[in-house]
Every structure is written in structure tokens, then in C-alpha cells.
Length: 266
Image 1: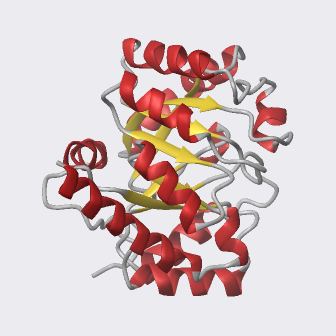
Image 2: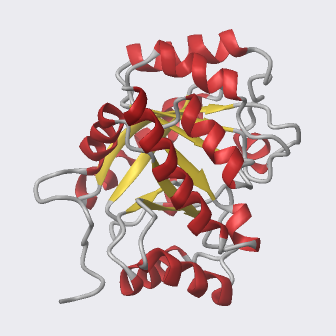
């Protein structure tokens, strides 16, 4: 079999969005690893892929806010050769789109007021996306203050929602679902001092019925557990694993622990 072919661990006939939706319905907690192609160091990346091969990762997200050296294809190739984990693009711009992934989180930055990131770049990318064969997942991207200025906020030219303004985040999430977005991504930003607050995740979870992804600032199994228990369906971890790849196993164990507790309550 060609290792670079698009192969995923999904059941036959099941696409990526339906997998996210099903996981939410069943209370299954999922884990994604965010790989920034510009920052992926070969030695650490190889260790991470070995851990991924053993299981525990549901998705790889590939992308970043900047594109200093275009290593996207190299990263995807390395993942394909190591495991069959589905690969989703998490692009910071149309330049980071490649048909070699399985799908793309088509991000609309609904927390900001920059028209380019609400619809402008999407218009530019639309013809290529249609021809790419990628599964397109319309995603409402909500940037929340994580206690430090982030590259995402700077590059996007938007202000994050203040962490204490839970009602603003909830209304933003509701508006996204009313516009037909299929997934919500609550983002504190890469390198955030604080992850998205538990009360914020809880409030959004109670207000919407679509999959909720949470990322940014999650550096420990306890923080991941808090987010999952609050209602996150998919946790995204990136920066922490660059320093401590072994954390991946702890996160996988915590995910199963939360699932078991939820099932016993139900």
C-alpha cells in the first residue's frame, strides 16, 4: 500500500465531521496533536509519531499562524509513514492548503471583525478547495484571551474575547451555529498562560449541540481533564508536547477516565 495515500482510522464510509459529531453524541473524548510545520524538530517529531503509532491520538492538526519555511508536505509525509491517524489542516492562510491531508478545518474567525478571516481568504481559496478532494469542515474559530499576547491575535489583527466575558463567548458561539457552522473551536492561542476557562467551556457546551474543540495553554493532564469534563469534545495540544512528548500517554489515559465517569453518570 502507498503510505502517502489518504488513509484514516475511521470506519468505512464515515467522514471526519460525522466522526466528531458521533463522538459528541456518545460522550467519547478525543485528542488531537497540533503540529506547526515550521517548529517541528525532527527528533521530537519522530518520538511523537512513535507514540501516536501506539494509539491515543484521534487526529493530527497541521498548520500555524506563520509560514517561514514551507514544511507542510514533509510533516504530512512523515505522519503518513508512521501511522494511519487522520490529518486535518489547521491553516493560518490559503498558502497552507494542500490536498495531501484528509480534511481541513475551514476556520471563520467569528470572534474578530477582520473581514479577511471571516470570508475574504475563504473566497480566494474556494476554487482550490473544491478541486482538492479535502473534506471541508466549516469551523467557527473563537479566540479567547489566554493571559498573553499571541501570534494568532497579532497576525489576525483581532482582539481576543476577554476571558471573563463568558456571555460574549456564548453569544458568539450561538451566532456561529445559526450561520450553519458545524464545529466550534475555542482557542486561547499557542503559548497561552491560561487555557480556556472551565466555566466558559461549560457555558458554550450548554448553549450549543455541535462538537466543541478546545486548544491553547493546555500543558497537563489535569488541565485536559478539566476541559473534557466541562464539555470539550476534542482537546488540541501542541506546545506542551514539543517539550514533553511523553505527556501524550497521560492525556490518552485521562480521556478514557473521563469517558468512563460520564458513562457511569448516564
